[in-house]
Length: 109
Image (cartoon, rainbow, N blue to C red; front, side, top):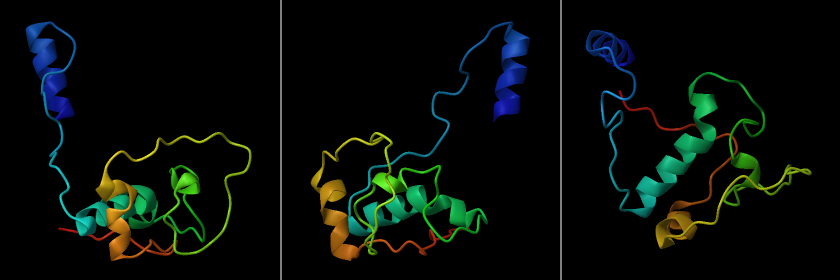
């Protein structure tokens, strides 16, 4: 879509967004869906083939408090996340089980 947007902007002699919605968005409604989304966001480097024996240093995993394993790697860096505002994200997803460091995001073809 990027190539199409650039071509259209060149044709119209303009700059800026061409397509309003570049991704599929939908509300997560169940604890299971929220847990799967958390695994996807925090552990996505594993899905992309990065072999790490710990938490992805480029994710917010160091500040995540839903790991099954107990450890501390935050160091001296300030928190980069905000507190969850909804019940599903705060505690509901935990009913499906805490997330293991070695867990992979599910793959849907």
